[in-house]
Image (tube, rainbow, N blue to C red; front, side):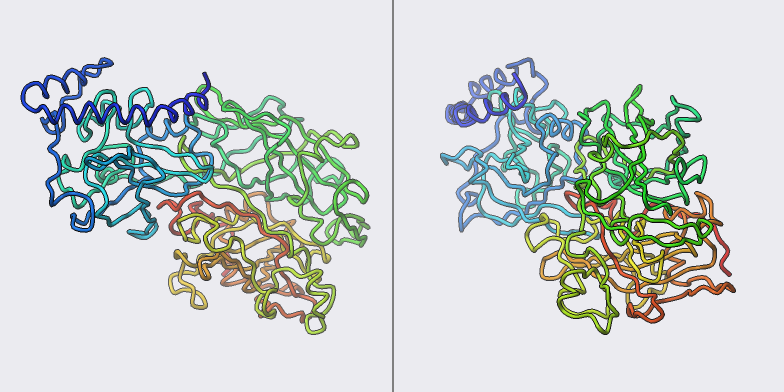
Length: 625
C-alpha cells in the first residue's frame, strides 16, 4: 500500500479511533482507584511500548476543574509553537507524508475538550497566528480560552494536507515516539498532550513534534545559508569522467544551484565562450529526477550573440555525498521562426576585433528567458566539449526544510523604450516599458510580485532572494540587454541614501554585469506595501576601472567581488569611458539603463538564516584606491 493510500485510510478511521480512545480514557477516569491504574498500564504495554510510564510519574491526568473549563469564564491560555527547529525525525516524517513539498499555510490547536464530542478535527481546530517574536524569528502564537483537556498541534500546507504531532505509533505521530513520552498522555494506542499535565497550563510553549518548550540551547539555523562556492569542473574534452564534490546530502533534489561561472578552454566563437559568464540554470524537465539524481541546464550568451551555449549537468549521490558532473554540452543557433520570440541586430563589436556580429538584441540576449530543456534537444544543435563550470553558488537543504520556489518577473518589463525618456508616449511605455527607476511615474516605476495575502503568512521581504536579473541600455553593450548576477546591497556602516540594511519590510539588491568596458550596476528594492510584495528600480552605476577582458573568472565574478563597494564608490579611470552614477535614469549621452527582468526565489517561511546580507564572503580582488 502506498503512502497516499495509507494516509487516506488513516483519515477514514481517525474519528472512530478517536472515540474509542476517549471511551477508554473516560472509563478509566470514572472507575478510579487501582483498577484505573492497572487499565492504563496495560494499555501502555500494548504494542510493546512499555517505556511509557506516565507524565512525571502520573499514569492518569486529573480532569479540569470547573474554573479551568473552556469558555468565556475559563483561563486565558497563551500558546507559542516553534516549527523552524524541529528535530530530524519529525522533519523526516513530514517527508514521508509528502508534506513539505508546498509552503505552510497555517497551524492549529487540535483539541478534544472535556466532555465534548469533537475529536481533534482540523476544521474545528483553533488557528494560530504567525508573528515575529525576534528579528527574523517567527512562531505561531495564540491567546485563547477555548481548550481545556486533550490537545495537540497540526500544521497545514498550501496543498490542503495536515501534519498532526499527536496520534498513534501506526500513524508515526512524532509524539508517539519513545523520546517524547515525558510530555504526552497515552490512551490505548494514542498519544496526546493534556492541559492538566502541563507545568504551566496558561503559558504553553512547544517545538512542533517534541517535548521541548523552545528551540534547543545554542540552536542555529543554517537552512538557507549558501554553501561555499564549488571547485572547478573541467571540460568534457579535458576529463569526461570528472566530478566535483558538493558535500553531504541525503537527497540530490535538496542541492539547489542558483548560478555558476561558465567559461571554456578557448574564446573561439564557435567552440568557446568569450567572455566568461556568471550565469543561471534551469532544471532539466526532460529528466525523471529522483532522490539519487537531478539534472540542470546551464545557459549563456556571450559576445557572439547568435549562439545560446549550454551544458547539461547532473547532481547525484555517491556514498552519501552530493557530486556534480557533465552529462553533455551543446550549442544552439538562435534565430527567428524557431518557436520562440526573438529579435536580432547586427553591428561591429570592438570587443571581438571589430568583427561584424549579427545576433540577439534587447531582452532576447537573456539566456534564462528561453526554455532550455526544449532548446537543448533541438535537432539542429552542435555538440560541444570545451565548456567549463566553476564556483557554483548553491544551497544544500535538509530533509524537511521548506525549499524555496522559483519565480521570474519578465512579463511587462520586456525592454526599454525605443525613444528618448522625455519624448516617450504613453503607448510606447505600455508596449515596451521595463523597471525604469525614479524618472518614471505610476505603474512604470514598480511592480507587484505578490498581492497581499498571496505569499504566505510570513510577511517578510527577506524571504525573497533575487538570484539574477537583466540590465538593458541603449548606451551599454551595444544596446543589447545583459544577464546580471544579483547580490544583497551592503550600504556600509553609515548607511546609503537612508538605507541601513535589510528589514522585514525592505531589502535592496545590486544587479551586476561585467561586459565590455567594465561593470554595469543597478540598484533595486523589494518592499512591503499594504501587505503586497513589490519591487522597484532605484538607480544605476558604471564602474569602468578595468575592461571585462582584463578580468579572469575570479576577479570578474560578481559573486566573489564586493559589488556593493563598487556601487558605492565606482572606480575612477583615465580611459575615455564614462563612469560613476547615472542619476535618475536619465538618457543623457545615451547612458540610460534599466532592468529588463528579475529572477528570484521565495522561501516557504521566514527563518533566522535569511536575516542579514548574503553569506558568501567576497574576495578583495581589486585595489580601487
